[in-house]
Image (cartoon, rainbow over all chains, first blue to last red; front, side):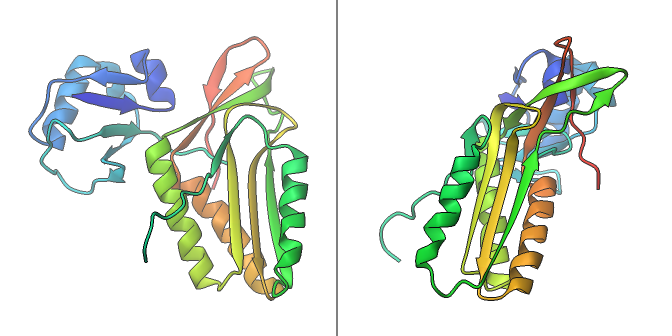
Amino acid sequence: MKVLLFGELTDIAGNNSIEIETSKDVVTLNDNILQKFPSLQNMKYRTAVNNSFINSNITLHESDVVALLPAFAGG
Amino acid sequence: MSGEKKERLFFQEGAIAPETIASSISHHSKKKNIGAHQIFLGQVREDEKNGKKIIAIQFDVYDEMAQKEMEKIREEIIVVHKLTCAHIIHSKGMVNTGEICFFVFVSSPHRKAATDACSEMVERIKKEVPIFGKEIFEDETHQWKKNKD
């Protein structure tokens, strides 16, 4: 599944999205992401699924839109 | 409610022209119940970091989520402060130092509601809307903008 990246995470991955094997839930997805991009380990970010931040380990589906979001900096 | 709700545009490509702000003000002359406007304008500052000057910020926006969050913040603040209206524009893409990148304009019958609402709207947008800023230095290197509290 496609995972969208923003802010400084795009510098780390060298792209604004990454392709990760479809994972059953958010924790598994995060493990898979860190395995493929270990440098993200040191980064602070929150995960959004379908445009909302998630507060628990929800189940994922192929069609879900996942985004990793570092601190916002608008204004 | 019937029909599709018109989607507001909260983002525009590049800097916000002073003429856009002037014309937005003049559009309000027809709304005779307004007694107070409050406007916030964010301008790209020429900060210096490690001896290098910032020449521009490139704003990157997570469009779908940002649209949703902007709608939510705007609607909540209109209700709480009983505003007559509220307008928000934030830049996307490249904005040079000295140019306007953020425009918040709220109106109400009396000044306190307008003042409080504008300040609250600015703070919430900075915290809750997925906008990222790449600070571009004069030597073409960059770093990512971090908002202070």
